[in-house]
Image (tube, rainbow, N blue to C red):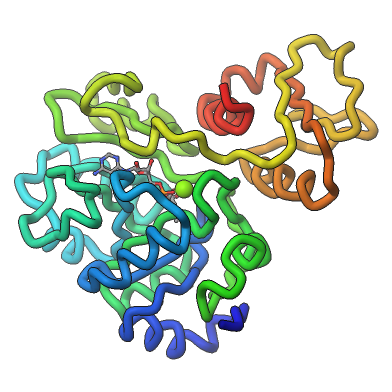
Length: 301
Ligand code: TXA
Ligand code: MG
């Protein structure tokens, strides 16, 4: 199968592929997603096999309206409406009770469903036409998430017919994930929308997920975001002597490290055949929960 990168002018083709059960990739404001219609079990299965994703790692459902979200869920708590109202469309995923009709394939057998409404105009136009799409990041499982159509091509070439081109993703790391199933909200994955912003809206403390708690996200147990190169955390700037250094405050010869550049840089290092990537662990970086979370996973810590 030839994989084509096409512009939004080819939206009709993307819609047709999805309707006939063939997954395609599309841009969101966070990272590129590999989409399938939530109603098509065979297409959902294809997503797991294309990515090489363990079947107990559930998928995020992407909607373009609150009505679509209401049809997929039940017993929604007030916190869902407060957060959706404030942050949707945008990079926040909410884990709530699923409707009985949602396939266990989507939820990895859990009673919950993860939902978000992306803000990227291409994603929104696509989902308005197709209805809710399940979409994990469009990378091979274990590789850094794709932030350009070329990253998707690198991982999924020959496995999908179409990649909708939305240019570089504005945010560059995956959405914040908050679990609203329990008595208190739990942050399952940090992102650009921070814990404090969520606490301000809910007027309630948000707890951090404990890897071992039953409420944690199945995705947390897998090594993620890893390039082939070794990723080393460097705490003393004198030890920054490698060929490939990422820094939030780069001096000459280093590369800029931000949420938007991290995954692109990890992939670039692999294309160059770099053996080791050094990360300059400045104080600012140590306090950036979302970015540090991805870096630790890339380093296999
Ligand atoms: O920004 C994003 O969220 C991107 C774009 C494409 O929207 N998507 C994304 O999907 O990052 P994925 O599949 O790579 O990550 C989904 C995460 C996983 O860690 C998964 O375990 C968790 O969400 N998740 C999904 N459903 C869940 C559920 N019912 N309960 C707990 N965690 C869930
Ligand atoms: Mg992913």
